[in-house]
Image (tube, rainbow, N blue to C red; front, side, top):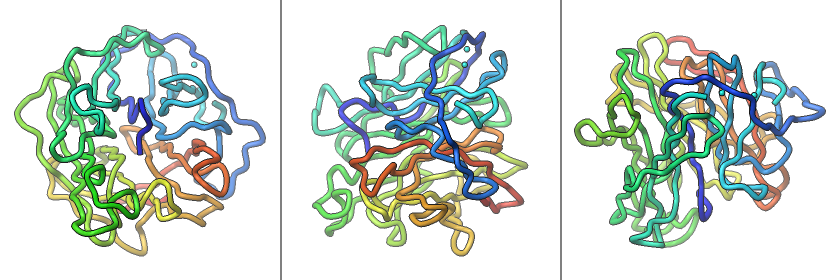
Amino acid sequence: MVAHFSLTLLTLLISGLPNYVWAFVAQNITARCDSIKGPVIWTNFPDPSLIWVDSENSWFAFATNGNGVNVQLATSPDFTTWKADGSFVMYYAAISAQDPTAHCVGVATSSTVRGPYTPLADPFACHLDLGGAIDAAGHHHPDGSLYVVYKVDGNNRGSGGSCNNGVAPIKSTPIMLQKVAADGYTKIGSEVQILDRDDGDGPLIEAPSLIHVNGVWFLFFSSGCFAETTYDLSYAFATSVTGPYTKAGGPIAPLLVTGRDGLKAPGSACVAKDGSKIVFHAWLGDSINAGRGMWTGIPSISGTTVTL
């Protein structure tokens, strides 16, 4: 799912005194239904990650490398048209110096949302023996503590087929949860596994985004293969941050699939921490080669049910 250098998710705002930043502004936005709009960015903008900056009164979206830059940035004051200084933590995935066949999750910090970001010397998570680690995202617990979720990239050690994990023996692609200190990266205790793929997910699950709404934790994730139209967006829920998590099933999940509102391979979403906004990517053409644009959505959450 990641390229040679890939920002998987910028997620954790420690504090902020924002400035304005450049943005790709979508033109001729077409609303296909009440809650889904897009593409709001018409250039290649995959794996979008979302953060609200209070002092800027704006949304910031970051994306995987593309269009000649390593970390892409877009902003919106109203979540429809697509402008932040303080202390920010970015989680990203990059090729491991120890093992160039795998990625590690790294951490970089900056005093402004636009950067420059300075990477820490040591990776945050690697799991090289299991295939690497990607797709990190931060989570604000309602008690004020902080967590990071990420994917162990087991399909990277697969035997071929769909996303390199469609041929037996099928590898695990677990979602891990790590508690961290107030700086956003110092680990507290050990990571725990909170979800994994099963036969209904195809070759993998990935791109976790964890939020808490009205006493329920919602773990959004994608399954299928990002390079195929099987890619989708789904979620699981729990009453504790560490689980156990129950995957939502039909007819309420997956939330987004190919064919919905003309989307192709929708997924890799990031949800605002209050559950009020979502960004995700989908193909801009008939294949992944056309690039992946960013779409937006307004989720509706009732009990343990999410709708888009």
